[in-house]
Image (tube, rainbow, N blue to C red):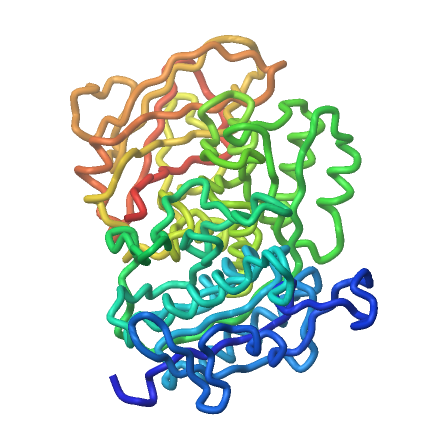
Length: 496
């Protein structure tokens, strides 16, 4: 390591850690962010003259950069995230790590945004703050700040280098895009509900290296385009469908994080689902996550979420609300094509989710022929980011045929067979061919709305789908002609 790469750059944006009473003569006046010198002067073992701090493993060079006007984190904007990312990029070759001092209210949003924006990261970017100002008695600020510096300076101090955007608070180190604020007042304010902490600070700092993403040997690249035309909405029992429809019709809205019940469930009333379908048809991306603090969205597992899936809502898996919102802004900022963005949102990018879903889409609505009662659908495009798909990581594969209605509109039975890359399949084709994906028999009632049929196709996917070739799907209806809105194959892989 050259001398130019030694040390840590401390970036101060504001927040509680550097706040003092607005009127220094009145300790009860409102707290406002003060300048960085006030914060640094209270840092133990900091040598301001030589700009270094002495830690147990030696001394660490410190340099600082402060917002000209420190801000309360409630006022952080997309422009501030872009400014942070650009600042890290400009100083990347001069330091071994970075510490960002930040208010706690939106710290998890900033950590998530930076995780997506900083490509090819191989150095620590540690965000921290405090629940009490650094100048106050019983403040948690000093421990958080000093430990964040030690984690960022791991190369100098002989520790484990964490090549990620992360959050240190109280005594835990968390992945930035897995972090959520859990408490408004407790010193253990942040949690990582769906991913283990990968570091703990007690007498010693211990890093679980197996949980870290590998650092890149490529040059750092900032992907700073973020689309601000997004929103987040919690659904609730009895929610007005008119309100939902009006929100979804908001001018310039391109994407919505829908915070649903349980594992992604939502009302199944026609008005609710019609409002969702209309928004998706208008080109809006709707990302479904759970309102619960932990857990994973599994659209289609229960009937109350199958309707969302059939209408184009996509699964947010186990994203935090902060990661979901920032990922939506990031992905739409990189690719304004909402159909491609919808697929990209389901793929793990920076360790923000435990699984990836790679989608294979087949050509749209079709009516099965009166005579053969079969139709062959062609794959419409290559898998988004197909080079990322690894068949060895496949956990589950689903064929999803959605929006099925019978051509005569009568109540009856659906009896479907599906074949992959076997366009000659008919009702007489034997089901022992390896191209046979499955068969589904279920009752159909037009008054209940369009039907959805899912097939587990794990073995066929492992045998025939590599991610580099295109496919066709043949659907055979044994009971009679029908119409389907869409069909796709979802390849669910582990993210590690």
